[in-house]
Length: 157
Length: 175
Image 1: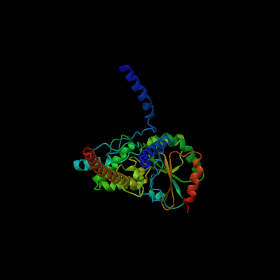
Image 2: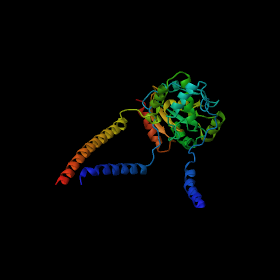
Image 3: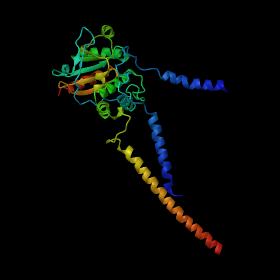
Image 4: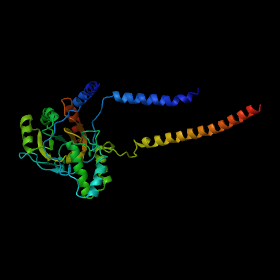
């Protein structure tokens, strides 16, 4: 059983290992100063981590720059940390990136001309659901009363 | 049975179909820069090799539209596009290069091996210009007009079929 399990696991994992070969070669320069170094001020570093966790790595598109080990993610972390250290607001840094890459770079959804249905549709669906629920409950109650009166009338008959 | 009962199932099948369709579509992982049609941000980069000057925003101002080529000696597609850049240079196009996260000795070897179509090469060790102009990888090539406005972005290596396209964009950028 165990042998079968590990064989299956290998069969599943082997193609994944092949797919994960990096597409581009890596450079040989050391990472940017603030790529892997935390800011001295813990409060600023906490802000940096919070921001970096919601920014998309552009070379490894399903990761955020806080998680990614790509050189470019390191360079983006350097920008985030050095800009925070220079006194910029986290929101301004996010906006700086959105101006350059569009909404795509940010994992924090914002209401815009293309994203408003994302915010509106759930509200409509919830409203519709509640409406349905209340109508059902209301009908159930009156149905129940009808049934009771029907049964009592049966008994009396 | 009331027909309205079928609406949720219909919606479910619709979304299933939509998801299935999207899953079978080829993945588009190109990230277009939002900086096209905007001014090239201010930058000044030191020389990437001793033999050539560095690059700054001021180098794009005046004269004819120029190409800004973002590349690196460690990037394989950059080797593939080197020949096409030479062709563009032969057509009288000025190409200003920016080497991303690169060592001067590696840049020198690359230029010796694959040719040097550049008039200047800036050195960008922390991808700062890449982030400034919304580039997400190497190589990328930008058409910059004489006023310093980014007019066109080409993502990935320039292949033979892209040369007429770039020449046309350069011509368009003249006006």
